[in-house]
Length: 261
Length: 370
Ligand SMILES: Nc1ncnc2c1ncn2[C@@H]1O[C@H](COP(=O)(O)OP(=O)(O)O)[C@@H](O)[C@H]1O
Ligand SMILES: [Mg+2]
Image: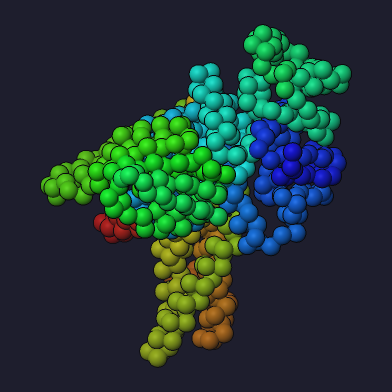
């Protein structure tokens, strides 16, 4: 499969703390890649670096073969319009209503009429499973789960090629989380979407992600879930050896889901 | 690139979509689709089987056009069109309700008047509650000093007082230079330049020193209080404090209040001194009044109570500025817009109230012969 994003020799250092040390990662077109790792292992920083929000200490990032850090601002902005991002805490514009949050990019980057923008906004709300009346609310009036959904709707509004999700299901009730996973799978199917998701949710890992990249020792170890489960590396074993992890893995192997990749 | 193949057959219009139908092609899709006329067709078939890519926006534009045809009496059939999309579109359409908002504009003026009066009352009530809370907090702090946060007070004395020293000193000098120049010039024509000293000293000590300092501090610290506390509100930090059993008043409001009550009088004294020094300098330069003449004139004609009449106002101004700043901070609700609004209000309202209070003091001092 073709590589859409490549991270090479990435080093990130904050003060004396080295978060990434010569990290390599390949993201392939049309896959759903799960990024996992313990808290504070640098998942969000990795995502932010790929998105260009964090200037790495050293290293290169390629998108469809083009190096991003050396690119002109204009070109970069154009490229980024093909990316959808959902931040860990939503990052909704607090002074805009939900409707305006979602419509913002449409109004800004298309020639669609306001009525069309509004309809498309409602379609996105429907896609993420929110009622239409939510459109008139402000972010401060939403629950955590609703914020996640609105953030996803906003990330989807320009029909991105690559969707970045930072812990999309954390803070959701199990039913919503499962719906969310299903939603991602559906979108991925229909949109030729490449999805990169940071997640702690083992259900998501097992049911949605085709490949998993794990941050271990400041680098990436990647493979399918089955490959990672079979890995002898102590840290990886530890990550998947918790009781919850075990329960989920058992359940999924009974259903024959993840290991038959 | 989008490609569209239309074939007409026995009253059926068949659209064969090909290529990549994506958001980027929205304009092209719209023009191409709307250019197709139904003519005699009674049925439309939208065939998406040959598509390489169809994203939501493009699909919706097709769906939208199909709705138009349907309203014109044609029967629509989608083939190989993602069923999920159609489901979303149908549901979104059904749920679309008219945008709210007109109601507010159509209200009668009487009703709006009543509402703003009620809002004003609510605001007033909120402030009185806040004021009461702070008083209680102060009393509690007085009787149990262990609940009092000295470190926090020191921190705020530093940030509101010490770091304001340069700007306050500068402003005091500037205003006194202005008065000395303006007044001295006029009085010299009358041969009464000695009275410049009285004029500068009295106006600065009674009014201008404390007033300008208070306005400066309202701008610097009142807004800072509102923004600091407001941001903590939006981040739910205040709630976190509360559930940990902390009292936001004791932790956030009282230290700021006490700190400003300490800092503002000190800044006022500084402003008075700087203003007099500047006046002495300018007088000696343009009016030939030597430093010793200046000093003896001030010592002779300016009583201590003139200085006291100015200084006594400083703690009251400090209370107003601190309370308004903290109160507006506490009134911030989730959005960043609200944060900006309340920060602005903190400055405007506290400057207004400082001036109002100053006017009241003038009347009071006049009545008391102070
Ligand atoms: N801007 C920053 N300055 C200093 N340290 C940072 C910064 N951003 C992240 N870090 C540190 O980098 C590490 C990884 O953080 P993060 O990527 O957010 O973790 P997670 O994997 O849980 O998302 C943490 O130890 C964090 O303290
Ligand atoms: Mg994180």
